[in-house]
Length: 128
Image (cartoon, rainbow, N blue to C red; front, side, top):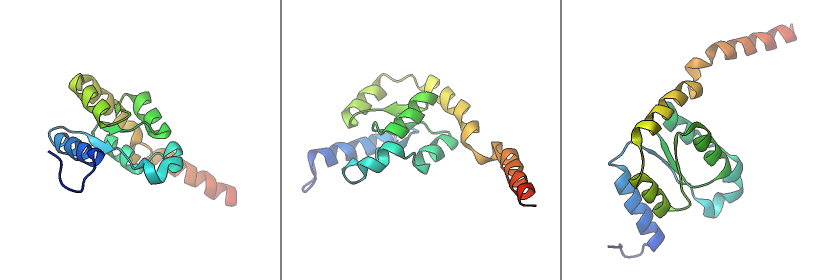
């Protein structure tokens, strides 16, 4: 049942968000109406943070987000909420969880601190 004043799309998104509370997923279905050009090239921090926390990501097919999710197998990308719901219905959660666990170490800073220190040292040495 739709709430007064909400479009069908708003109602569908609201229903999806309610359904997501039953699962452990991060939601990155971002607003394409006002951010289309930016979203085609940007990889929002929230996507990386979800994976760093061990959460697979659900998203719409923005180029950078889609590439990250599909390359690592760390979530689902759908053209709309109905497509995502259908994919969730046939999902093998164990494979997805395994992929997220593998990717987690590559996106957290703790794994990169040595490289960062080396970079800073190189920059300091070049200035000296």
